[in-house]
Length: 278
Image (cartoon, rainbow, N blue to C red; front, side, top):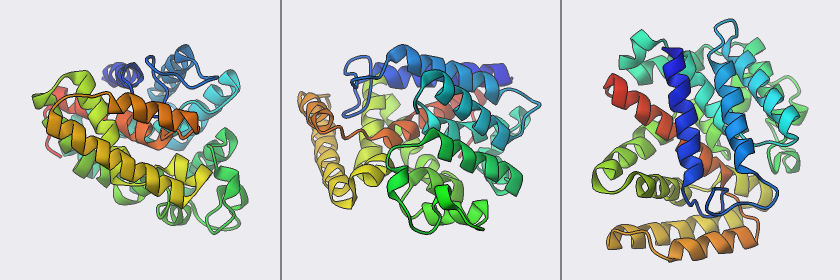
């Protein structure tokens, strides 16, 4: 069964890579220095580690992030690893209680496993991490416990927030929106609109860390405006291309929104097969 989830995970990563996502890397509009094959390699490596039954969650996250970073020379998929690895911990016969089981997985991350997760974050060096020096800094964590660091981080980081509120942004927001879109438009368009939904609903953590609140707020507002226009016209229009060029010209990469998109695709695919309610 884990092999099936692994295939769905790899397919989710591929599908996200196949569509134009303003500011983010795709086969249609790349980011200088990034390579499609490297994203695919990162998905393959992490997926193989996720199904290793001998490893606990923290070990899977650390080994995946470490191997991808060391072999690729930079961070390609830390956010995806952090968000998707816990999903693999839900036993196949318990997928019908997906939300409760995911909550169980997150609540039961012990301090040893938490340390490994924090090491994965620190060593993968996500953009803007070194600019933060406040409470909950993973580079200077002092004596704070893992869950406390996630709680502090959740105030500015959407991945930490998922760990704190049981993926509410995905399960209560992105997933229902995506399920609705799948009935109304093509698969590619649905993924693009899902990505824009995440970009328009809150500040992207990657941009917020790297460029600050003002820039993150401005991009969120632009995304909201474009999403409304696209939905009202019921087609993907040229504004999407202009928005992509604008973001890439300033190197504004909404990486966290792409991570949330992959996670939503994975859960949606699992749900299509196992027919569970959220």
